[in-house]
Structure formats: structure tokens, C-alpha cells
Image (tube, rainbow, N blue to C red; front, side, top):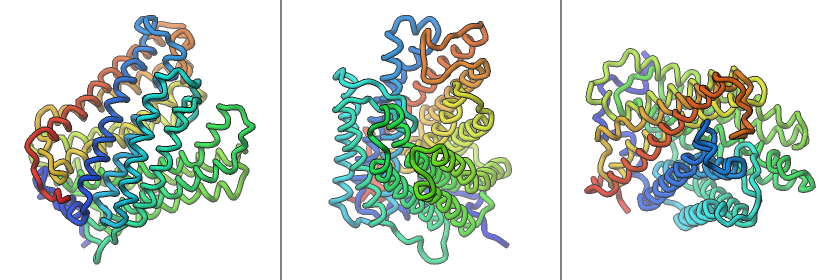
Length: 472
């Protein structure tokens, strides 16, 4: 009889033995807390810009703002802080606690560079230098301060990945539950290395003579697609980890789970093959990366998602666990990511269904990582986040984002274009106005939910620390 990943009688919330084993082998808890702080500051900063971003696209209210340029600058800063900086920071946190204490100097160098780069990128919009470039994956402000900040952040991320490879821990004999999770974390480090190499290849191969938008679009295309595998793998780790911590029975053996992570990692290597098979400026290069992400990502996502969903339906989870932020984050993450995946299949044309798709998927990843933060707070020496506010935060954040993407899908059916605001949206009918209004309402609710996460974690940090496995 095949042993499942988690038993019905799971551990109490906040006492997960997997996190204990992962964290106990790391002597860099101070560094892990630093990555958490950088992620929190990035989310807080993105929330400020997100308020202005949503208002700039909401009918009537957008007339109060200098929409066009302000919308684009706000969007760039919001995306780079809430996606790039936040996700890299949480990857740094997970790679730190699951790795060894090797190369501490390189680890701190990576953190320092990423923090300095983030500060420069956040400062750049207030300098008035450079125009917005709405490139996919990493939009930029084409000015010296923002580009310098992005370059410094990129160097820090590369150093983080290198240190992650050096500090990788073996999965251990027998591949127990924590070994399968560690293997998943390890595969995300390798996928990140592929992304870094892809960005380096693009810097060498993409002609600088191209117009600005085309240059940055192609520059970030290959590496950007590889990064999606990194975030997806970390999300799957989050689902399995949260399922184990809440007693949800996942009927997949640790070996099968490791095999699914390995299949996801194999798909990542389509990206370097694309650089060898086609010119980086060609349509073929673009399509190879796109189809690799669509087909390869689902190899691991679908089986794990279905197994976790089945576990949620049949497991007898205690009421106190159901009322925990870990359970709320797990369910909300799966719902949002699934909604984003379904919307992706409905995309046709360059309209706001595209941001609806990636908002669902990215927020699904973010909710899983938020749940992991709640799980790991006691292991980082902080008070457990077990308040009612912590429980409602992922529900509020997820519900707001669901309304947000429903409004975008609704409006996309009428052809409302992406990356525009105000009069440029050309809202011709009441239905289009209602759709974008729903988008605005959902966005504001989601912003409140996101900022509540920062508040909940800060309250845990300010409280009396629960120094469980929080060695220096």
C-alpha cells in the first residue's frame, strides 16, 4: 500500500515537524528574517502604488488623476515590487532555511544587493528621469536610476541563486515527506539558475539597436518564462507543505511528488534549447518559450493540485485548523490559481483578459507563500499568526482578487485593451463601465487584504518571540 504524503491526523498549526527539520539545519535565521523584511517592504510599497493604479482605471475616480503617464509609472513600480521583489525575497527566505550555512558572505552580499536595488527602483519614479516601458515580465522606467537599481537587483538575485546552488542540502535517505519538499525547493533553485543564464544570454544576443519597447520585451522574454517555473514550483511546495501542516491527506507518495517536481524541472530546460534553436528576435523563439510554459508547467501542477483538492474534500480537518490562516491561505491559493488557469484558456486578442489570467496565477502563488510565512513565523523566532485577522486576511485578499479578475474578464469580452487607462480605455457601453468598476472594487479589496498581511506579520514580529528553532 502506497504511503500518502500526509496523514489525516496532522500536526497542530504552528508545530509543523517539516518546517522544524528544514529550519533546524540552517544557521542563517537572521538572514531569513532579512529576506522576510524585504518582502514585506516590497508588498507595502506595491500596495501604495496599487491604490493609485486601481483608482486610475476606475470610472469617474480616474478623472481626478493625471492618468496616462501616472498609470504607467504606477503599474511598473507596483508590478516590480509585488511580483519581482516579493517573489525573489520569499525564494531567498525558503532557500535560506532549507539550505546549509555554507557561503554566508555570498548570502549576505546577495541580500544587500537586492535591498539596495529595490530602494533605487522604488525611488526612481520620483526623480522624473526616464519614460515607462510596459514590457512583459519586468516593466521598466527607462532612466538611469531605475535601470541601475534593476541591474543591482539582478546581480543580487544572481548571487542568491549561486549561493542557493552551493548551499543545497541533500533530500536524505528514504525520501521522507520533508525530503520531497526539500527536493522541490532544490528544483526551484536549479530553475532559477536557468532563468539567470537566460537573462545573461539575452543581454549578449538581443540587438541594442531595436526600439526601446521591443528591446526590453525580448530581453526579458526567455528568462521571464523560466522564472514562471520557479514561482510555480515554490507554489506547489507551499500547497504540499500547508496541506501537511493542516492535516490534509494528499494521496501521493513522496517519491511520486519528487518525480513530478523533476518533470517540471525538465520543462525548464526548453528555455536554453530555445536560444540554441532560434534567433532571439524571431517569432519562433517567442513561441517555443510560450508553449513550453503552457504545456510543461501543467505536468506537475495538475496532479498535485488534484491530489490536494481531493484531500481537502475527504480529510476530516478539525474545526480549529479550518479556522486557521494556513488553511485559508491554502484554499484561497488553489482557487485563485485555478481561476487564472481557466481564464488563460479563454484569452483571445490583446485585451484585459491577459492581466486577468496572470493576476489569478501570480496571486495564487503569492497566497501560497503568505501561508508559508504564517507557518514559518514561529520558526523564525516570532509569535504565531493565529488571530482572526490572520484568518480573514487570505480570504479577503483572495476574494478581492477574484472580483478583480472577473471584472477584467467581463471587460475583456467587450474588447477593453490592456495597459491603458482613463479615456484610452474607450469604455463605450454600460456593461464595459460596470466590468471595470467591478475590477476597481475587487482591486481595492485585494489591496486591503495585501496590506493586512503586512500588518499581521508586523504584529507577530512585534509580539513576544517564540524562539523555536531560531538559532543565529
